Amino acid sequence: MPRPPRSALLLLIAALSVTLAELPGCARMQKDKQASALLSTADAYRETLRWGYWDAAVEFLHPDAQKELDLSPLANVRVTGIEVVRAASITPESTAVRLVRIDFVLEDEQRVKQVLDRQEWRWDEQHKVWLLHSGLPQF
View 1 (cartoon, rainbow, N blue to C red):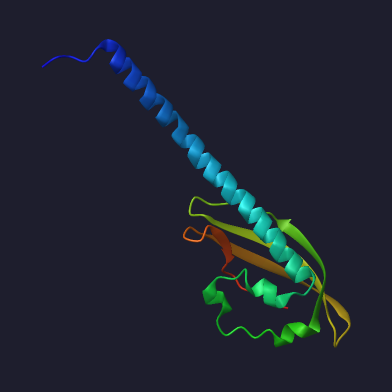
View 2: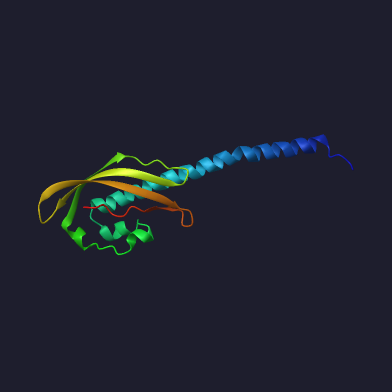
């Protein structure tokens, strides 16, 4: 059996090493895209809460968290401020937990209150979006 020329083997090794060297970069790029998407999604969700767009806020929830959701009590809630207490970091399982302090007023009481909202986000690989699994804040 004839041996392939040495230059062909070197070319094959070089091509494989370049391909293998790119793999970690692809994984890193995917994680960067996920992190960017999480930041954008969480910021958009924060704005829906801040302005009382409860129907829009529901769209960020995982379908299981949307079941039997009654939005009528939220008509009494006016959010006055939102502050991220602990930023989310993405786990290898593509989940992220973020802690947010929400200042709000119950319109019928006219008292300022505060709640810590623990937001659990999970990456939906099929739709390439972050979904909130922890539900809406408990005002």
